[in-house]
Length: 517
Image (cartoon, rainbow, N blue to C red):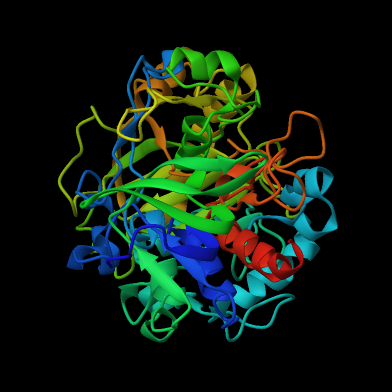
């Protein structure tokens, strides 16, 4: 949409992804609030985005930022592809559509960092406002929110996945109705953001035609924000690059919702960050904030424990990955508290780049991962312009804790894979393969098979300490009229996929926003 130069907004939201779509929709409910929503990409036009089965094939298309890490010493010096959505709807247009709130204990660190509103109980109203859930009654379950959350019935779930769930039960793993009712440990069908067989991105849910028709809401797409512009102690707007050239867009308040990669990069390009890091990138330092871009966390998955099938594996009727199994690694019978490992059954031969996958329909995979990795990385700008590729270093598996727990997770996946309920499907193990038995063998396989679960977070950490990037109101420390509201503010990853939590963060902040002048 064409917007005249020097347009002024009451609130300017940078990023039309999962958080930005929510914020723009909620704040523009007040007709007196003029809201601008800037997005580097365009509205979706690729029909594959709406097809839940196509999500693994979306990586590398024009609406993917196509970020890459630096080589990772503990994953065989591999460079990892980091697909991120450069599109209206952001990464909710690319991800696997699993909707998992997390365990209440996951949010204790959030509460310590920001107060009661960021606890599990404090976030429940935000979760509920966002959702229309198919699941039965439970505390804080949404009934009339914008985002449809589908809990599949048995007739929709692959017979392979049903056998996998029974294999967990054979080991004493609890069977639970779904993963969004409080307790998380156990096996359940995945709740999915799918409606009538189609993906529902957060933009689909929140930026409906009626919302976009509001006179006080303007979408400015195909627009790259170079930096925030300051008028002494406050931000006055942003400098952008658009097809027609450079523009200034002014606002009373700026909300950065560009995600855990792009939000810290924007701040650093604007001169806010670690002074030495900025100097190395050719950026003059305005405010020395050491932790911007640090505390980077991401969930890894091992892709995977692959089995040749005894009979043809029918195609998924959902989105390939149909059931998560959250566990306590020290006791598979344990039914309460926050899990430390996770398994997932995928109705496809899912393998990491560089490993050979058998033909679709001939195999299935059990993935495994660690819910609360302790390795911490960082993001640095590659130069002063938005077009300069960043340096992303997640430092995967850097801690002994993560390496040991991943080994345990893989052993647990193999244990589940050998249970009697899977006998009718399991012909033989392909990966890691029968010869991989020692801890050294498993570690070597994990190094080759680990890949991102697409959950980067933490790079603009919320807190009340001197090094925190944003305060408990998500206000950028040192700048009164700039806020960061997205996955980057998360102090510590929750147990599962983070999209549900990001939406709840945006809902919670949007309810507070009118008071944050």
